[in-house]
Each structure stands twice: as C-alpha cells, then as structure tokens.
Image 1 (cartoon, rainbow, N blue to C red):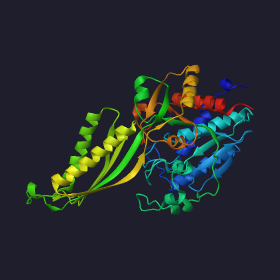
Image 2: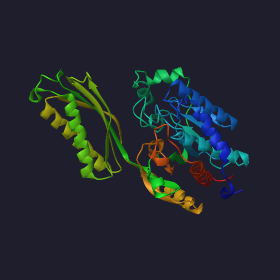
Image 3: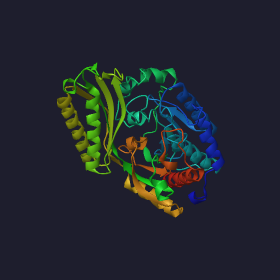
Image 4: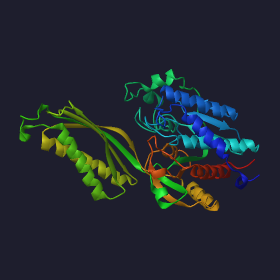
Length: 410
C-alpha cells in the first residue's frame, strides 16, 4: 500500500460534515456555534463521538483544545487541525472542514490497517473565531505558549460571560496536554475569499498569514439638540468617528491593495435621530502581509485619532483587541504541498491568507502550512457559505497524500 493508492470516502466525509453542522443549526441554513456556548458543547460532543468511532486516543487540555490521536511508532506527530466554533451566522465549512477532513484521513488509514511511523493527530482548537472572546485563535495561542491559560480564563466575552467559567460549565476544562513534538502541522481550510474561484483553480498553496491589528476606538463628545446647536459649537462624536473612517479609506487607497482597513462595528450614544452623538465606539481591523507597512497603518490611525480630537473638540481613546505579526509558513512543507498537488493533476497557485488561522499560532513552534479550497462567490461567515463537494474531495485527498508522506508508512 502506498500513499498514491489511498483515497477519501466522499459519502462518509460529507456525512461527517453534515452531522457536525446539525449542532447549532440555524433555521435558514448555516450554523451558530459561538465558542463555549451550549451549541459549541453539542459540536464538541459530536466530534468526540466521531473520534471514538475511530478508536482514537482523546486528550482535552486546560483551554479546551481537543486532540484525537491515531497512534504511530515514533514520538513526533503529524498534526491536522482547525476549529469547530463559528460566528453567529456561520456556514458548515469554515474551520469544520479541516477537523472533519482530518478524521477522514484517519479513517482511510484505519480502513487499510495502516499504522504510520509518526502518530497522526487531529486537533480542534478553542475559540478560533474570536466572535465571543477576543483575541481570536485563542486556543492555539495558549497551546503554543504565547498566552498564559490563567489570563485566558479571565477574559470577558461580548455577552459579559467569563471564558474560564464557561469552559468549566460545558465540561471542557481539561487536565491533559496536547502532543508537543510536532513533525508537521497541515491545515485544510476553505479560502473564504473569491480568488481561487475567480482564477478557476482547484487549490491554494498558502505561504503565510498576513498581519492583523484590531483596535477599539472610543470617542467622547457632548450630546446636543440637532436643530438648535450650530455646527461650530458641537462636539460631535459621530462626526469624529466618520472622519477617522474616511481617513482610513484614503490610507488604503494610498498604500495599495496589500493594505486593508475595516470599521466593522460602530455604536453611537444616545443613537437618536435628533440628538448629536455624545459617544461613539468603533472597531478598526487592519491587515497587511508586511509588518512594516502594518505598523505604518497603525501610525496613520493614531494620527487620525489626534486630528479628530482637535478638529471636533472630542476626547479619543483606544485599546488594542488583537495584534499578530505576519507569519510565513515553512518553505519545505509549502513546497511539498505544491509538488503533491501538481502530481495529482490539481491546478493551484500560491497565495497569502487574508484571514487568521490556528496554523499561524503553530508556525512559530513547529513546521506548518495550509491548503485552501475554493469558496463559492468568496462567501464565508455567512449561512450561504458553500464549497462544492468536488473541491472538498480534492482538498481532502491532497491532505491525505501530504499527511501520509509526512507521517510515513510503517
């Protein structure tokens, strides 16, 4: 038996995706499995059920990361992984595909009675999305040693819940350690963007993850009557927030297509049609694959906040929600994925990931790389998120080939 003769079971793989998708299913389609909610607990239970069906050794660590281990004969492991938490209106594939495809790889090995030299591990990391608790990629951040678990326990979510309390409530505050000696980490993921579909390509060979900077900006002005207060006497928090927003748009135009900036949330107080806003709270998401350029963008944001303060007579404060430098993936592993895709006759291109992923947290401590498959119309974080079954099978079979290559056949 050789790696080239192995292939995933399409029916079984799709059934596994649908079974997980039933946990937190939304009436109109898609799923809502915010981290550490009851729906996430249901998804975790389904994942554990599927792991037990494969006779995998299961470990849950103190931050709730789940590791299913298919034993080999050496110490260093080959790990596949992603996450099963979603945004509030998520799809079936974001994160889940990487975990479920990993289980299908194990099922293929088990079907053929193959015991690899390196144990094969499937990991599901806690709170990758960051939709309920900031920062995102939190589980893999703790696993990699970049965040202390006790600090993570104290994080308060957007709904007022405390992460450690919720982790204990759902029974996933584990006491074991995940495998530490990683020979290779490979993450299969949907692209979540339109590039592969636009180019008519099967596979994205991900060379790294761009840097991410999340900032919350708070503007304090003074409420006033919208009809009786002259513009020159106002301290308009909403107008100051708009100035910052438009300044970011101008910055993006000047810096070029690699730089992105998004004001994703904006809350005005008192939020009334005939009252000048006394307070504005906004989030700014900035990304760039070049850290020097990202630092320049952060400097521009600081300049805009200062200008808004002076121009509109308001106070402006800010706090960092998340900051991750660009992360390059291991060149040799990237090359292996590309060569394998070509051997399989799959069309592919190299690209940087525009979204954050658990792989970027693993990359500083172990060889890591990612595989992208197309997203229809580039839609993700949306109940309409969809990847064609043929693309899923291409990605899963590529994952199978790469993992068996890295794990070796005993």
